[in-house]
Length: 293
Ligand code: G1P
Image (cartoon, rainbow, N blue to C red; front, side, top):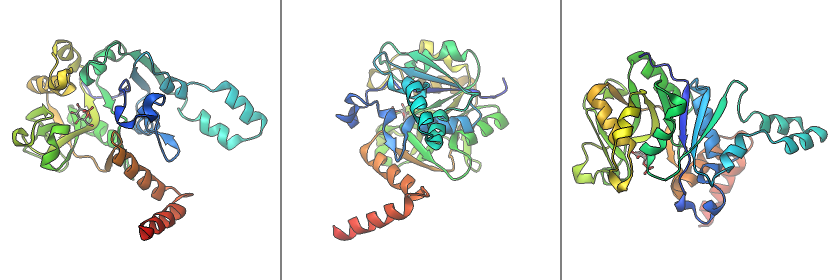
């Protein structure tokens, strides 16, 4: 099957316990980096990659993501009356017109593999993307997912993004072995969820971007709970490897782990330093703050 990727799945049902108490009422995907919530960065990256259908897998308590992408009638009217056309455009343009959103509920938090399986009725048997909004990928040129979609089309294969991590951190990630890299990609021979450093097949960690063949769904339907008692996407990919080519891809760009407090802080600094209106003040403040320490 040709790898034309038009749909993307965003698993956003997690509890975000690392950011309590903020996440008591604000889902972690709505935490801002400078002036946009994390989910908007992931959605922008998907749209730039050519995605036109966004599938959010959410839980029944979380309405903030749906509200964010919905039309804000009252606010639009107020801004229109006040003649604030720039702000009006900003809230209207959270999504371009050709993009549609679909919301799917994950009834029980049974793991990432299960969350992706919940999107099956919307995806069907097509290749699709998965983006974990916690992983914010900053890049100057084409976004990470765009690079992966291009590679998937060229090689007619599933593509998983990876980056090297210190060996002692392997137990926080899916880890692949892909011994024969050509440039930035290589065929995956093995993939394991969160192995201990001494058992890890390499130090190449899976980052939250995947381009997957629709063949993953029948496999997910049979996947039993694994690491942490959860249905793992990694375990289904390990099965997919047996029947299809799956590539590991080292993207161009820098990943911030915004599922952790320090990752969110680092991302905020990076994006502030990159922001036309904020860079000078942000730099001056950081220098002064460091000098005073
Ligand atoms: C998930 C995946 C893991 C991957 C990671 C990337 O883990 O299960 O394979 O390396 O995302 O962020 P989580 O961070 O949700 O525990």
